[in-house]
Image 1 (cartoon, rainbow, N blue to C red):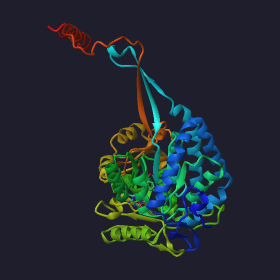
Image 2 (image 1 turned 180 degrees about the vertical axis):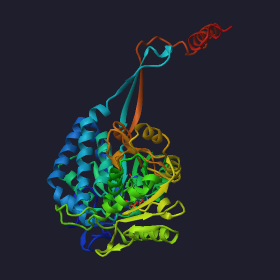
Image 3 (image 1 turned 45 degrees about the vertical axis):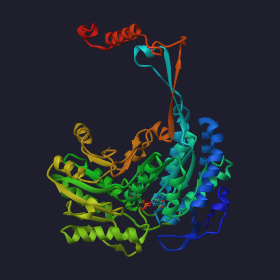
Length: 516
Ligand code: NAD
């Protein structure tokens, strides 16, 4: 099923190379999109800018109406869109349907709260001289937001950010991954089909198209690798436009001796394998206190052995995880396993490509790992789970923090106070206690990475919309005198009196208040 940008009616047709998409699981041709260049990006940006003022003028309630109609369209076309997600990623049907759940949740959450989040804020003035003033903060969107996304969530990835930007009143120039452009291009087509204002466009192409987007917009929301994030931040710095970056992760899981080991093992398997392990917030390394290490490992192996792999039939929910996205991604996973084994790790399960085919890597459990190994330091982004035995919580914490990344994390213990204490010392943007991955799906609280995992946050209640806005302060005078006491000309006695008043009201003891 091919999708062409011409069908969206927002971007001029042109002679251009085609980008052909094949299913990673079985190699079949799925569809194609054009490879677009800077001229098309500039034309799309111009059209979006022309449409944006009317979109902003609709107000949050008016804009939300269009977003809810888009939600209806997505649900009416669910099978087709989720089918495209599956065909271009090779994921299990379960992993694909999660993407529609994200779309539904994000649209409902931000449209429900749009009016509240974007309301003017009245603020009490500070200081006596300002008592006669009214302060208000109002927000105006960045006119054009650039949205650049990776391949691991073709629908959910852009959805997590596009809704906040559209609700805010911005126009959005989106650029999905060149590996998986089809589902998102269709979703944008749906936006146009419902007759919504033409404030959302989809540019297709590789990194060059992404760079052209960064060159055209007023703010960039990027999700992807650290390497690309750095480039985008540098270019945004040159252009002096804000950027928000959601980058890679190497999320640590800490299992303490008093944890519910059965639950922790189940959470570890789910956290490591969801989306085939190709998720930024997946569990990438586990530290287990020595007294429960063997029991935990045994349960993880048992549960992981039961995981069914394969790209199942649409609607069948017959497998847990699917294929690797590209041969290059499989090679990274292979390299991490080989490096670990060569330096002393043991493979308790998997550790190789699956008999299902070259695109599949078997769910893998590694033990006897340490921080000299790539599997504990670099982002693996595959169905592997390296587990390390630690003496106590201090060692677990030290190792968890010994990373260039700081996206998410989890702590497993029955002792709430201990978990809370550790959560204040772990260096990650979010901490799930007695669960894995959940912190990322909480729309009212921020989701963002520390260290090399990112700059800024997504979601976070009002901030999920306000991040796409500029704040504007309005100060108005309640009483307008003919002149203010500090205006010209300077009158020495008046200035002296004002200085005395500052001292009288500002000092904290009588000697200083009276200037003695
Ligand atoms: P990537 O950085 O290679 O590509 C991401 C997007 O950036 C693609 O659309 C690509 O075309 C575009 N791009 C490439 N070069 C560009 C440039 N110079 N200027 C502008 N755009 C450019 O990432 P990927 O391989 O597609 O995705 C995997 C990475 O994404 C992993 O590191 C993963 O951890 C990360 N990720 C992070 C999150 C998060 O929320 N933190 C979520 C999902 C994925």
